[in-house]
Amino acid sequence: MNIYEELTKEMKELEEQGLLVNIRTLESAQGAWLNMNGKKVLNMCSNNYLGFANDERLKKASIKAIEEWGVGPGAVRSIAGTLTIHNTLESELAKFKHVEDTLVVQSGFNANQAIIPAIMRSEDAILSDELNHASIIDGVRLTKSKKYVWKHKDVKSLEEALKKADSENAKRKLIITDGVFSMDGDVAPLPEICDVAEKYNALVMVDDAHGEGVLGSNGRGIVDHFGLHGRVDIEVGTLSKAFGVVGGFVAGKKELIKYLKQKARPFLFSSSLSPAESGAALEAIKILTENDIEVKKLWDNGKYFQEKMREMGFDTGETVTPITPVMLYEAKTAKKFSSRLYEEGIFASAIGFPTVPKGKARIRVMISAAHSREDLDFALEKFKLIGKELEII
Ligand SMILES: *Cc1c(COP(=O)(O)O)cnc(C)c1O
Image 1 (spheres, rainbow, N blue to C red):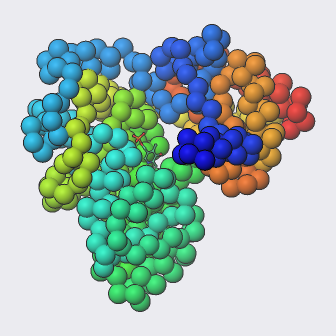
Image 2: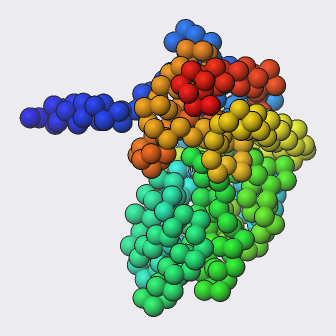
């Protein structure tokens, strides 16, 4: 067999196991409603929490930035690709998040590749929640540090790992956790993590991709939500979810950000955001600084939808955020439910193994401030219909 035959064979096997990713194409811009396959469907799949991805104010700011700064940065940030608009974005983001400084890179994924390998050496220890995001896992893989994986959200298990790292003479110890875990909508016990970190003199890093623009006052994130300013050393965030644009960042102390500008490889070796993206992200920060209309609407929508779903008898799992898992347990049931929803005009994806553990299949409903009450009522009616049909409720 040549390589192409091998790849085709492997994908056939994935297909037989129901693990092949089906890549759908949106035939209209992000929003509450989408065109897909020539059909209009209610969008309950995207991370466009605040509806900013197609917001007129962000679009205008983006066009204005193109007119002033052009379309591309022309070089990596460290050679000739740092424009004033990049510096403004970093300082405005720092002000918004109440941190000393930020470093913006191409994506949230790259933000983890920027920070973790830059500061972690072979004599150090990384302590990672077992359900951390793939971009954290890959960032950790780029280091020679010792790895200690602790049980999901289990601070006792974390403390055991810290003890072990100490007994193995770790120098720097870095605890890493997602802020909001996107498959269940649950939140890291960050205050308790900070307590145990202080006891063992470890650093705390949180990747708040699903919390930026969602948790905390005006969407300032999980650190603000728990009032932990000054106790969390490193925040990683994304501009690609609630902020509606694309990009990622690291937020923390001045010395750290200065150091990253010398050492972070995605910053040094890959061109950064375009002016269009930077301008739109700046507008999102401006909107969020001035008001929390969209953040409030997102939470109101989440609360309304989840309450009605529970009243009907659905199991919405462990969520404490607008992310709504509808637990169906059997992968086959989840798939069937999702395809019936699509027939009824709702785009909500089934999620099964290996993204979530076996026997924990679900429909994951992503609530957005872009949804109207009528949209949510439409969805609730269809969930009821199909829930009865498949004898879930
Ligand atoms: C989505 C996500 C990322 C990646 O963010 P992008 O900006 O899309 O690259 C990183 N970390 C976590 C925890 C995420 O949920």
